[in-house]
Length: 107
Image (cartoon, rainbow, N blue to C red):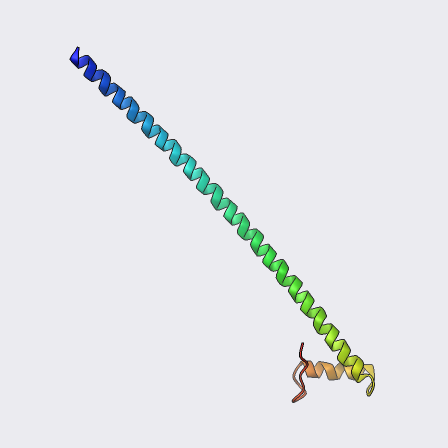
C-alpha cells in the first residue's frame, strides 16, 4: 500500500511538473509573440516617423523657397526704378551667388 501511494505521489508530481512546464512554455510562446508584435509596431512607427520627417522637410524647403522668391522679387522690383527687368534679375542673381562684394540679401 505504501508503494502504491509513493507511485501515485510520484505520478502526481510528474504530472504537476509536466503541467507547469507546459504552462511555462505557453507563457514563453506568448511572450515571444508579444515581443514580435511590439517589434513590428516599432518598425511601423519608425517608418511613419521617417515619412513624416521627410514630409516636414519637404514642406520646410518649399516654404523657404517661396520666402526667398518673395524677397528676390521685392529686390527686383526695387531695382526696376533704375534698370530694366532683365538687368535687375541678373543683378539679384549675382548678389545671391555672392559675386557682388559687400552686398548680401538676408532671408
